[in-house]
Image 1 (cartoon, one colour):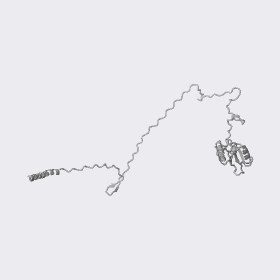
Image 2 (image 1 turned 120 degrees about the horizontal axis):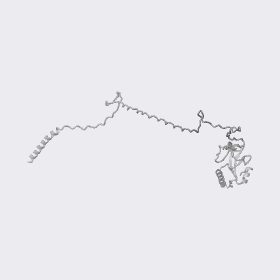
Image 3 (image 1 turned 30 degrees about the vertical axis):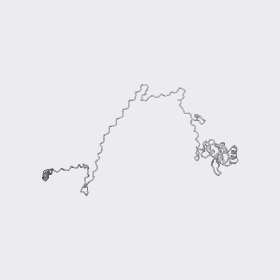
Image 4 (image 1 turned 45 degrees about the vertical axis):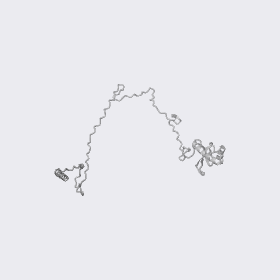
Length: 245
């Protein structure tokens, strides 16, 4: 019984394959899905033979896009300027003569035969007349181009503007007042006294203060010196006797 059942099962399997296989073979073959290709770019090619590549494709140059000039828009006409307003009418007070010109008032003689007076400007008669309006101001002195006027004021010849106080065969002496700035004078005096303290010398006083200008026939002609002294006695001994110790 086992053999018959297995035989029947095998026969049924074969018949099933025979019935099903023709149905599958008769189905039409399915077409492959079409591939969506990107759209080809649109170009305007130059009409020429071109160059043939290895693949057989003929390469041509692409023509440049045509430039279209913009249309010109006519401009609106410029508005005309408005007409000027009419001038106001004059009243009867402005009388005119027969030629249309206004009459001028003429000055009449007062009967004494004197001509009409004219306003004349007062001129300077050279004796101080005219209240000094036309008098020229004195020109400012020319300062030295060698020395800084913000430190020491010298004229164009490199000499102080103040008068000479003392003089000898070697130099001319001037006072420091109005010639050397106070700040610069104090700085020089402080340096001198610092040196005097280190060397054990007497300290210099702020007054008297003299400016020394060497004369031409000296070792340093035209040299400018600033001198301070311990007292008035030392000043006279240095200037008059030449004993500067």
